[in-house]
Image (cartoon, rainbow, N blue to C red; front, side, top):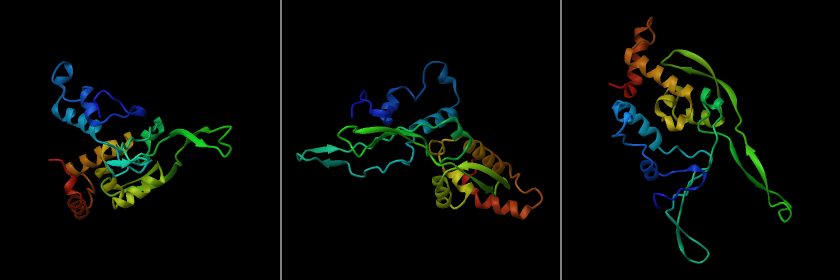
Length: 205
């Protein structure tokens, strides 16, 4: 696909993102930013979020009705994330605007529709922070937490592009600082050593 050809829904491929000057910053005032900031910015915008609202086609090409081979384009569905999503853990689920097909499609072929996520409130426990938290989430979030074998593992393993939550990033920062400083369970050294060994892989040297 050509660099200047943009796909619908404001979607850009990695090559198109690079052509827009997201990275690297070698000139101007942005070149003075520290390297760790540049790496985090590039990682956030170069990481493709995991598909939540659609199933990507693993094939590279398909054969149409005329026998012509055409490339498969897995274009993500445009999703809107309201400000409330930043203070919850929605698991990548957002608001989708689209159309539905009516029964009398000869007269009214389609009708506009908005798909809203079903938000539920659940209580989670963090081993690292030793804290119970009541957080707005979705059923997708609960499934992702089960797949990660725990709330802390989900927060630490999930990238910023998939979390899509300021709350999740604040929790990740607090967990990482707690692991580095070994400030968890001050009155229980054995429990603190157990937690430190369990999450040793996430400690940033």
